Length: 348
Ligand code: PA5
Image 1 (tube, protein in one colour):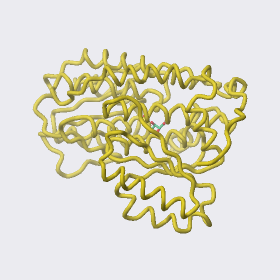
Image 2: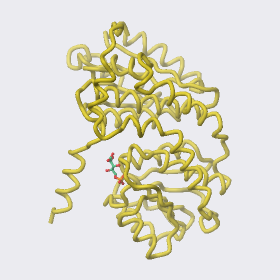
Image 3: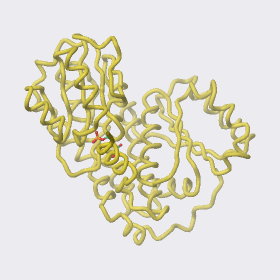
């Protein structure tokens, strides 16, 4: 995408908008993942063994851990984002409740539904009603530190589960490279590294509405980019999954120049993308050129599929925070979510 970004904004001054310290939390993400692994290694796994598939109940910043998990385990994981469970959930299903606050009504409701159908259940939460329920009923739960925004606690929400599922034999990947790549990114993408790729990306996205595309394991990463841009930068963003988008979404590009002049497509690219997905992206770029819709390509880092996946995720987290600063927003507060929850709490 041809757009001049040579004259950078005063990032140091803009960082003053980050009143609640999201940049600092982001910089510690690799450490959070390591802490998460250590927490997960303490959880006894025997009571959970013997399941053939799992449902991951969770919304928003917690629910994304379930989407990622579905691409990482050697058993089927179905993310559930509503009040009730699919009919097939039964004794062979592991019930996984993911709620950072422990007070999310959809997750609590689906968990209660599932507890009547299977004895294999586990929660990941900092406490709240979910923590209380688990403590009262002797349900195993992973207690994670409180005081974070749910979306800023992904290392605590997901990585204990990776350790735990490793103990159960359903997660077999080595995380060494992924953590090393994240460490490197933490150094390269922080505000003290001016002109870094995350800041460059934020400048390219500024004033535009991103359509983020991922494929396979990078599909939930594309969703994470969308939600992080929404919540950090307080602006619209959309995502879709390849190759599915080739069968519908691309027709919508025809009038994009007219009805969506500020759109920009972002392709998340992993060196492990299926060769036919790679071919599709090359053709899609030509189509976009013809439609006059700008696009960016972002490449994952590292050798392995996991490093590629998490490096794209982490880059998106940084870029969305820098975009917030360019938008004049404090990345942390999410007032509309809070207001909706407050009003629902009073709803008769
Ligand atoms: O980012 C947010 O604050 C939301 O997306 C929350 O994660 C969502 O509302 C669910 O809350 P919790 O993560 O506490 O279950």
